[in-house]
Image 1 (cartoon, rainbow, N blue to C red):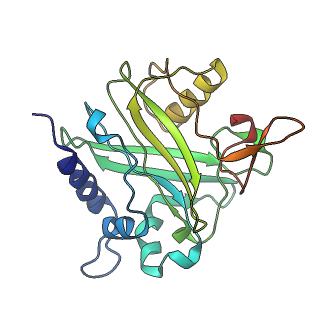
Image 2 (cartoon, one colour; image 1 turned 30 degrees about the vertical axis):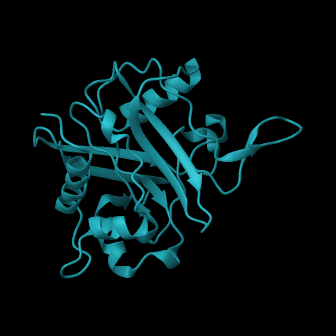
Image 3 (cartoon, rainbow, N blue to C red; image 1 turned 30 degrees about the horizontal axis):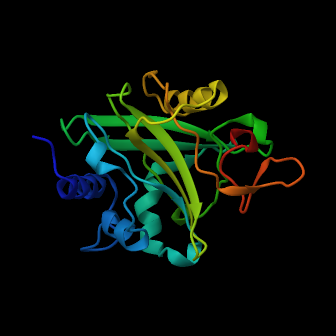
Length: 222
């Protein structure tokens, strides 16, 4: 039986609660996620197969408590001799209960050409929380990168999976493949993956999109 929208949303929060450390007695990280950013960006009515997905977000430190930092810190580490930020993702597939662990690395070099998947690093782990969407049905669904800047100054970047509706260029296809394979997921059929939402504005002279705030991705992604 296909899970209802409400039951799937609940499953997401329950799964997160398993792998994120309690912020304080009686408060789970999933609770903090709901408080800080309640919007659900997954197209839950379209989801099938084995999947799990949560937003990636950057927030002003004033919006995050020290307790929240303890929740997120276990996912991130930085090597003393490296400019890269390591990420460990741990979760259960909601449909099968299978335990999954993936390790990824983000290039945080100063030159934007170092990597397509690049973020700025902050010593304060409370600035970060992250998960990733996975799916077995790549023929009917695509993985989308989204970003937005809310009125309150919160910058949100999201990876979601939705039903296929559009196509992308070869360069965009290679970028999406790099994201997933870089996290250790099997190569997939990315035909029909849409281009990301525009998070900036086009330069009137060059036509190139320029970000309103520092981007986590290279300018070439746009």
